[in-house]
Amino acid sequence: MPTYLVEIPHSEKVSECKKVINVFLTSGSHLISQAHWGCKDGVHKLWFIYDFENKESALRAIPPLLRPDARIIELVKFRVEDVMQYTEA
Image 1 (cartoon, rainbow, N blue to C red):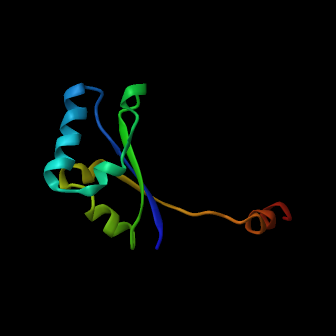
Image 2 (tube, rainbow, N blue to C red):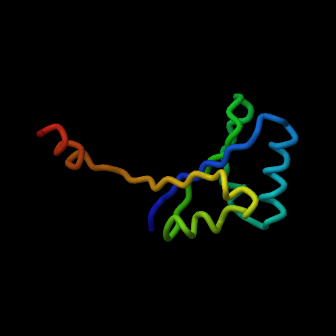
């Protein structure tokens, strides 16, 4: 199953940070327990890395109110052999 990085930005207001938390909690999404927050360091985004069937299922896991600003990025790992083929050009 593919792994995705999901990034959800929000404004720097403390009330907005709390709003995002509440949106996750009231939606029943279990992903809030997987979230990493940048707010303490002035980067007002949350990220989580999770396995989903596809990007659409990752998007459906995000509460509807937060979907428009979310970025969903499929993550892959390359083997050394995979990377080496690019140096042989």
